Image (cartoon, rainbow, N blue to C red; front, top):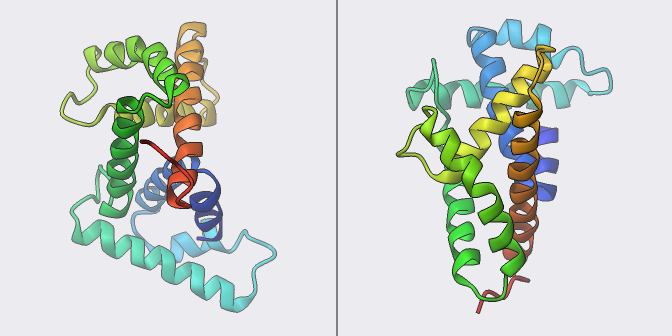
Amino acid sequence: MYISKQLKQKNIAEYLLYMWQVEDMIRANNFDMEKIRKTIIDPYPSLTDEQRKELARWYQDLINMMHDEGVMEKGHVQINKNVIVWLTDLHLRLLRSPKFPYYSAAYYKALPFIVELRAKGADKDEPELETCFDALYGVLMLKLQKKKISEETQKAMKVISDLLAILAEYYIQDKNGELDLD
């Protein structure tokens, strides 16, 4: 919860990847709050009792959302889907604006990789940015499993990551009312 708040303010892309990981950790612990306390909450050494209770409530709220929204096995809760919607909206506004050629260039550099990912089976109905996040999350999971990642995949992820980093910067500016798209 504390990490998610910090990430949401500083880097929306990292926030989303973190939240997807939290969803998977909840699934891995079979939606069992006792397991979540033992494996996730208790290992935090510097939390006060009140902070532990607050973190447990946060996890319980996420469990409830996942249950209510039918994403117990796969998928993402609406609060995380909303981030994709907001980012997609900003992404499209940036592409339409003549003031952001650097962003457009980063997008067109990433586009062949996005097209390739979608051709390899990514959900063609999901926004392109979600395809990007899915790919980054997949590579993150491979790294956590200490699996080898091809040079080609690393190159693609670097280009996609660069695009999302730029978008995350513009997201903060937009949220602060500092982004002039016209």
